Length: 413
Image 1 (cartoon, rainbow, N blue to C red):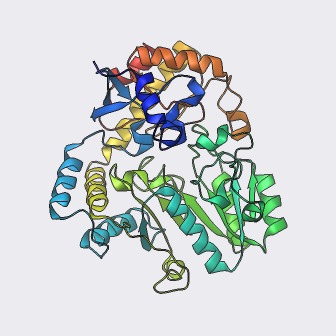
Image 2 (tube, rainbow, N blue to C red; image 1 turned 120 degrees about the vertical axis):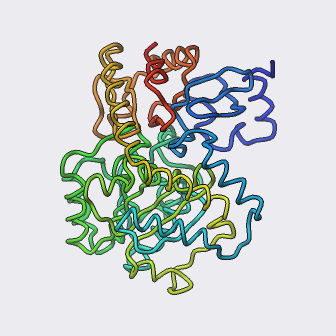
């Protein structure tokens, strides 16, 4: 038997800031020490005390084919034998980029980076460089990474901060950032019309997953596309989470929207650190070395991540029926959860959120109105039943191709 969770966390806090390398891992909303994971296989993880859990976090959505999937393990091992980093072009970058362009027709050119934050930060800089405008419109509760200019009414872990932003972000940095409630087309239209000459881009999670899973109202995304086109503003879809998870072509394929730029992450790295942004060739041509918008990264296009990402996308492309299977499984289980627990559930594809409020929310303000005490008590019961879900209220849970009905039924055991 290894050290207890508390002892491991105490040790970590002695050398790591806050004991973690990403705030939500600290389990602060749960007022208890976090799990320390020893290994994962398929739909399961084991903690350092040997307990097994059904994993419905899946590295925050990155592991759509499960933990230690053979295709990914083989790809990473083969890549590592050839060398882990070169800082020079490899054919694997081209091959993964070709797959992404084929899957998302809005993307004609891609630039790989190392994280979703870096992808969004770079896409916004590119939009500003392309349009010559400084402003960005986002939506309350949508989390686009921790770049300074976008930490305004952000979701995910930042949503737990007093002003849903961050200390250390100067007012001047965010003075060109506007944020309005998601699904509120009237407020969106008014803000766009008031600042049309200033706005370079509107950025949105087409299906927000960082305030829990909040679905767009019918027509909202289409009206957003029409408004941005009317005013010459670029539309950026942040599909770091939804890309290759809601369907093979992402949310833009599901809803039939063509954004100008798209950001990706999670799944395209096969569980390794990776992000990307892409869009129309004429916009992407503004990036250095062709244009004057600078972006660079020593580990961008890292061969391990490229080959792991290719392995996952190849699997998904060859087995597209798994999307329908995951959707059907989750939808039927959600009905059972609603009936047995009385709690509302939102689902889309392989994503879900169980809400601790009377109904499914439409925006960030509603999503934050949840019963914290009930969540804490239920989360403790889930752990006791061997179920691991995201350890915070305003987060989205995920399943993988490895999950079974029996795995999900443990949630209401």
